[in-house]
Length: 197
Image 1 (cartoon, one colour):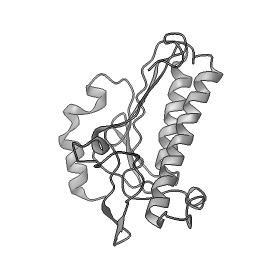
Image 2 (cartoon, rainbow, N blue to C red):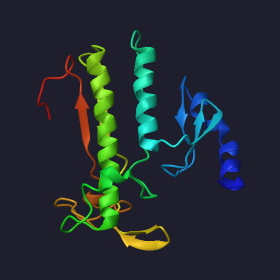
Image 3 (cartoon, one colour):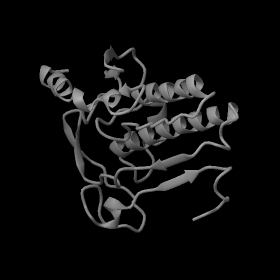
């Protein structure tokens, strides 16, 4: 990682999550990070990649946080980087989509990244269930924007990410529904009636 990226982090420490009310933080402070060759901040300490896939690292941190705080009320914000660029995913996940009709290699990578994130969310929900916390825990799933459907750079080439976006026009960076309409799913068994919309 270049020196300018580290200077961005150093200049932003006033806004570091630990200085903004979070007792624990594991993540990165800039807008993009390699999924395999990552550099993460752990409560102000730098940790370099240990070979694990970044999405899996965030899942492990979330599950470990539940384990540490299960006996007390806690707030956990799990903000995956996936499926942002760079397009990188474990090969076994990509293989499920590669060669499927109508799915380019780039979109296969993107879908694999989403699958891995979905697997991680399942592990977090399973841990809440296992610890008997699911009934009284409010879980909110949402996104920051709709999908990017244009092109991007991947391994030195421009690739297109056009794919199905339901009935919506537009994409990320648009104010059309395809760019701003995102899922908002809430699970709180003891506090909300099932099937509420």
